[in-house]
Length: 283
Image 1 (cartoon, rainbow, N blue to C red):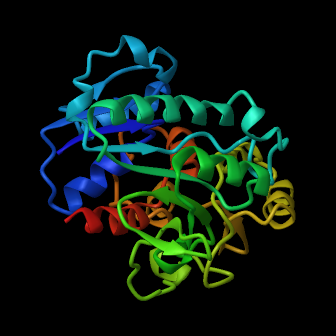
Image 2: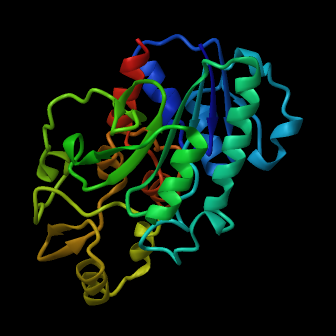
Image 3: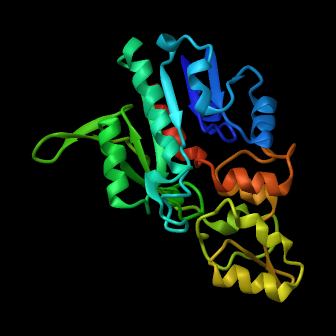
């Protein structure tokens, strides 16, 4: 297969393909964060880094050869935790460039598969716009079934669909394995988990590490409902290994970048076991 990963982040799509044993002949990725590119080049040196998605018309790609395109377009303007500018926002509006690229590929390969993800808290109006643009309704999946983190996301894909409703709309319908709901305590390197699972990991999470005052850190973690561990009579942030496990990644996957960089990527990333469910359908 030949794949194109937009807003590639830390290479979740590429890792899912590898773990599921699907051979990728040509892999292309678009990402702009330097530490994300550094991490991808370390794990997937064969992947061709194409640069900013806004420059896609200049990319040297055999568009007809692309079999799968993944897009984790920014959620900041759609999330309930953001300013709710929606798809008109500068960051979340980049979704429409993904649509341009998808439609361009379809001119040469009408059967190209795609996978688009975004937050479940997005405004209904914007969810409708995305669904109309892609021609398929989304499937709601909570990462809580695979990792000890509540992370509800919407997935749009034509990898597997079913007809729904009176008018037979196409809906993403990936067959999911039984929900296991793993325990947070099982991924900790030390300390005690206050609950079985944590709130959603966000890109801003590691900023709490700047609070050297323990009471200030405790207040932030408790009042903002962020993941934490009870240890030594106080509260601490999850360490880098635990953050990797919280998103279903292999231990030490991010060891070549800093804690802050890893937290930024993991907080904004796809949950690996969920993406593997989609890749299983390709097999």
